[in-house]
Length: 191
Image (cartoon, rainbow, N blue to C red):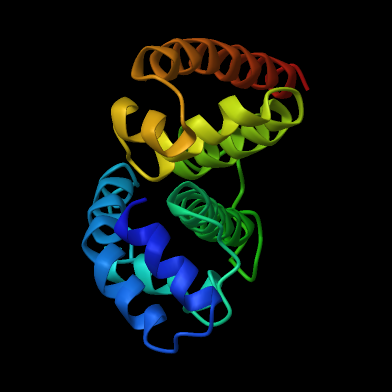
């Protein structure tokens, strides 16, 4: 049993200092993950990695009354929290781009921007939701590897599968998600 799981169990048993210990133990890893996630975001991003970690921690319950069973469950929840934060920000930015109080411009005279990171993130989110309905454990691997930034070895450890299986699942998942995302682009482009 690793340190994270032991601290989670201590917190579940009522140890009031366990939440602080958990945050101290995982903070550096969560911040590294957040830095990697933010590096993939579009230039001019206003959300900082530290803010992403803190917001994710708050969404996880800030250590009060932990609902996690073990390390895998915790990092899975952290991946989902970070994913949702980034998707919500992308949706808010997208809404602002489509008339959220912005001055309207004649499309014939304006330069049209190519789809950016926000659209890609939203498309990935929608495809990942559909993927999770059919392949929930493989979707969990995608979240741990892509959104949390765990290596295949680490993700395999968390999910209790081999690194080789994690790599196979990743290959399959990437192909499925790519097909799903490109087919929805074709469908939206047809309108």
